[in-house]
Length: 336
Image (cartoon, rainbow, N blue to C red; front, top):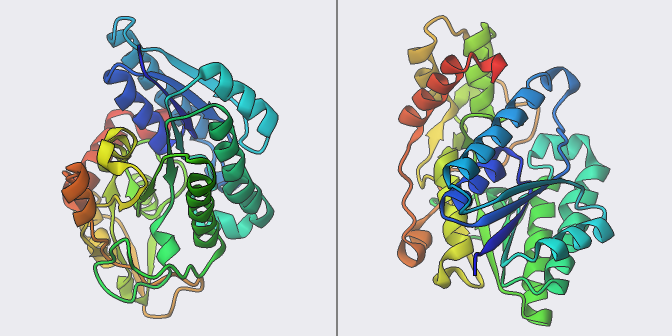
């Protein structure tokens, strides 16, 4: 029988590309998404265009599969448990991948009540629906923010989890619920901890998107602390490949994985790369501390995913940034 996956946040930056990957593998895909954006209103102008592009890409993959796989979009919130459970029961999926969230730390601070409702209560709603519908595996999108300040580098999955802000705390709560549902109800799971994902169609104003758009539109960039902050920048296709393995590989059952590039670069490095593509980009180095408290991060250890799943990051920041810029220029960016 044909297999089916139910992806919450399936019309999002990561979820829509993951849907394409499953469609190309012959799976039916149900994308369940509220179609909402939590960035500032003046930064939302391109969201409808990029959403349209994501959905067009998924439907094109469906057409190219010649009827071998189907794609369905359901507009709905994970905060509405009855509608969610009904939609999942009708879909009857083998696997649920839970990506829906307020996925940016700053937005979680700004929309605190929404963050708690979506990232915590919403996660338990999805877990409960999956339990009631007899799902074979539940894949949970967590975050490297669950670690808080890194105390050793690279950070492996057994690194202490001491989140310092609401987003990381809400994601860690989700992990605890996922494991509890496994213990109580036998729901098989896999937990994925991504970091600093970037690439085409991002609308959440993550740092790489900000650099690209600043270069495209002639805006300046400010680097606090001299741009010394380290991040494990991860190309979106590598992230998607990791989620696909977590969903389908037998060895992923009831395990937690870092899915990142496994390398760390500074924001100063990012600025230098950006200047290659945008020579006129104005970068202001501020030696003062960032007014927003940031967790101390760096590279994550991906050896467990390599060893158990065969995961291998393939695109690193220099090449990924170039591919991102090329996509934006090809699609005239604002018209994507």
